[in-house]
Length: 527
Picture (cartoon, rainbow, N blue to C red):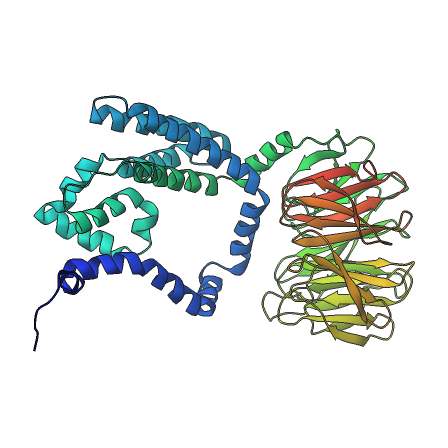
């Protein structure tokens, strides 16, 4: 029997061969493992961090992508130029220290403009870059000593993913020494790769950790539009327009009192309600009685506050049962004179759906449903409900008979709704599918989809011009769509996480809320 072993077989069977194979194959194996465990990992993320936190961060990154890309590109160019220019210097120490010093100054400036705790971030990223720009000879000598080799094998061999991500140059030099020994010389394209990978890594981290708000300001400056005016900053949600008084009402989790803006003097501070809204996201406006309604109170005593829409003073409070915790919506039904409040019910406790008579304060109906959004018809005693989680149903509910008339399946994670009176269609935004779904408002038969921007969340209809306006929570875009052809007529760039569109059709103006600002858009300017 031939017991000879070729050099190739010796390499494969040696500890060095196994180590190199592990270093090369471990990332693909990690990706495969993460994919196979994706459902368990998502469940873990939901329990530890929360889906809402992850979603908010993802939208913050997507909505400021180009601003972050600009910062990333500037950092890469400056750092690569500093490394390339210092190569001509004789002293290795100077070659090493000059780019690190430039990086420190650069990151101090970037984080001072676009992030909190700028000094700590600048020092941390500069230190990370310094570890990745240590001269090649220093690294190869360190990882080929007896003790250095052991530590490097343990560190680089065990830190799967982290070594490649945070220390790409030392990791690659360690791998090359295992292949070729101590005398490793990298030239040509390999030299640029060794220098470029750390620069790309720290520049990418810098761009990712920037705060969203100053990047939105940068985007506003870079994309100036005479048709768009940002007239307030803050975390806003529900809007309502008082056409007789020319007043825009606004509320949200970032404001403690209901805000009333004179739309003819948006440069002036808004008037505020005399009572707190308890930072409620929503309210309801009753133009017939000139009243405003919002719900609040403590965990033990909750009420609907009734305000005069002109003075913003409290008229009365209507007691409520304990409402289920979660984002809540209010509507006033003209056919029953009920104020309906519905909670998304983050936790299965309390009452998620309550109808209260506006005049008497009597509870007229409770339901065990927790919709993510409700929409009331002005022409019929019909309330429409949809759901972001737990179910994908679209429900039609008669407010007079208190009966569920229709229940049909719809897309996952749908959001806001609007009604097209001329065609008797109910429109439902579908953010994940980048479309607005059309339903027959009577039968809830699905009639088709209107394609629009990714992340479409809020919708509004200009019945006079037969236009649909849509706002995205991810792309910053407000789109104007012809309801005859379903073609986009115009597009306006606002800011991230657009939430509500409130129209003044006579003036051709849309007021749009977001989690960072309020906007006025002359949406007919480009028609």
